[in-house]
Amino acid sequence: MVTSVFIYFVYLKIIVLILCGIFLIGIIYYAKKLKIISQWKESWQEWWGIIPSMITTSKSHKEWQRIESFLAEPYESSWKLAVIQAQGIIKKTLNSIGYSGQGDDKDKDDFEQILEELKARNYQNLEILYQLHQVRQRIISDKNFSLSQSKAKEMVGIYKKFWEELLEVL
Image 1 (cartoon, rainbow, N blue to C red):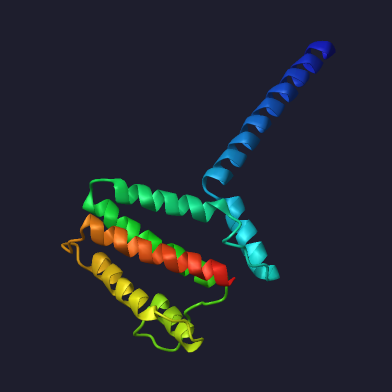
Image 2 (image 1 turned 180 degrees about the vertical axis):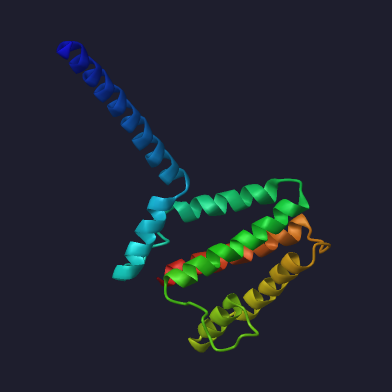
């Protein structure tokens, strides 16, 4: 009788260990899928003052490739998304090097305030970025806004050129 109870406990331990392993694998899988670990890493780096280098990460280059694939699609919505995401990369890069866009002017959004910070530091040709930002805002606010593929390619090209020049300065 005692040995049969002991055997049941051994089987129970094995089943519990297998279930724990399965749950651990599931937790790790969903943590990677939800990008929780990378968010913790970014917050830790921010807390310690370590600025992640946008130059060395292949993530930013993959984002540009994804944007270019959006431009190759035959859908206007994809072109609009490419423009929106291109400005997002610029904003993320500028935020990572210290331009927060947190100014006193509540009428302007973060990107406009970042452009003003850059203008105060004597960056050139920011008027073009401001015009592109205005077009992006129209894309977001006006669902009937029409954007051609050539115009979207031109806008993304300007954003990418600015991004590359920005990385050269760093």
